[in-house]
Image (tube, rainbow, N blue to C red; front, side, top):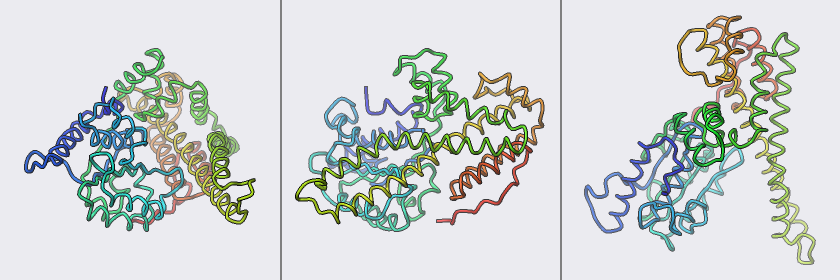
Length: 402
């Protein structure tokens, strides 16, 4: 067992991080030259969704604190991985962005010397969600770090991080985990059969968290099946509008169900901390804090709804990719092999050019939702494009370049 076990199919990246950990240990021993090669004070870990960026950041932090370079069993490893280590700070957000106030607190901690561990490690799991002000606040700390501070930033792509920050970090790119590696991990860690493991690994398209959810929860598999029914139900324009509405409603219901599990606990914890209902309570301050919490919860629910919609669009794109594979005779393995007969029937009624335009329509819809186009409007344009085999239904506002 080691801290690297959860990095499925990332052997090249793990080798780089292991070497860096050895270099960090050499630094602590006062060595110089080749012994410390590979270690630096700032890292940027990128990779597609579900590839394990956050896991890599946590594993690296744990290995840096471990006297055995990441054994996975000592107190340093266990507390670092869980987020309980006093010298490992993990920052992530369920909101749409990371605010400057959060980064300033992180910068303040980064300036301190380690209290118990070997390094002060700051892991920013959603570096792509830093606001402009937050990025500015972070820059100086990365430019002039404390001697024993290590920054680990995680983002989907290098372009998602502002140039001034990414130019000062060492880049580590994770790959999409191979299906076989994901299936093996599911079989090893979950009590499931090989068929289900391979189905979940294929359907997840390299997203480890999604693969686990598909393997463990029949309800997740059923929701995915309903999404994949959409292309076969688009018989007229009315059906297109209904399909878009159903996708939006399903996303809202799933996001609401997830939010209800945490919103009530958060509110109860805040009320207890504020002394609501006690003699020492201050109603004005309590109401302001509770209102701020409600606003944060609404923003989080909006992000979760977007995430659910994006996952559905990725599944639809994979279905049309399979249609294109069948139409062109490419011979590649189908992601949705269990739907091969339906895919062949859909492919026989259209042309490869139409399929490409349909894939473009889905991609444009993803970009539109990311650019804050109303989800229902974006999805209606997409479903009409899927029905008519075109992708020119609307113009997507482009996000400003950083």
